[in-house]
Length: 192
Image 1 (cartoon, rainbow, N blue to C red):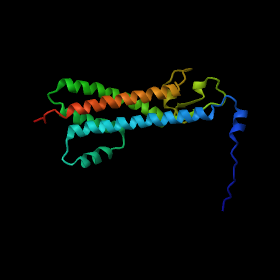
Image 2 (tube, rainbow, N blue to C red):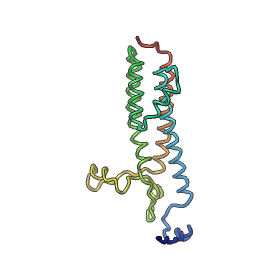
Image 3 (spheres, rainbow, N blue to C red):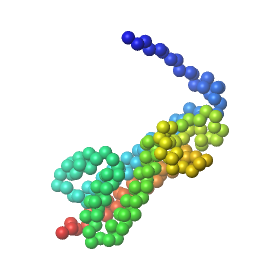
Image 4 (spheres, rainbow, N blue to C red):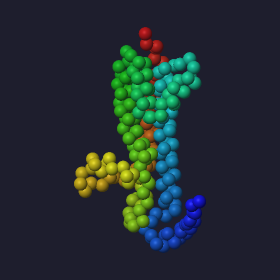
């Protein structure tokens, strides 16, 4: 039977004494709270995308359409499902289809921002004098895909607290646009 060693964690005051440039507890808490709010805002985007799908499909059993929509794990697949339904619902409504195409492209780009948050790593810098760079989201250390595409000497732009808050606002604005679009689909007559 293997023995396990017990490790004692270092008290926070000792960590701060050893690394005076390390972010304060309040800064770390604020960062993680903003990260949670931003991911929460994205959940609203996904819900509003479902509302667009539901408005287009008008199933007799709404539970069945929800089960189908939410059984798809990948967001871009859900976006493709909703887009196909919108295309059908917008037959003969070119202006609405054009608006959807713009909204779909915007949603697709925002999904990249969401992925930066969800699949990135939170980095805490012990020797960083710039307050906004003490804690941020950046690429995972072992994910070299971005390094391959980056030019020599070019660093990845960190996702700082300010950018997180901007993404939260962007996601909420996108959710509002999706909601408004879904509400305008309802009055469309059923295509032949």
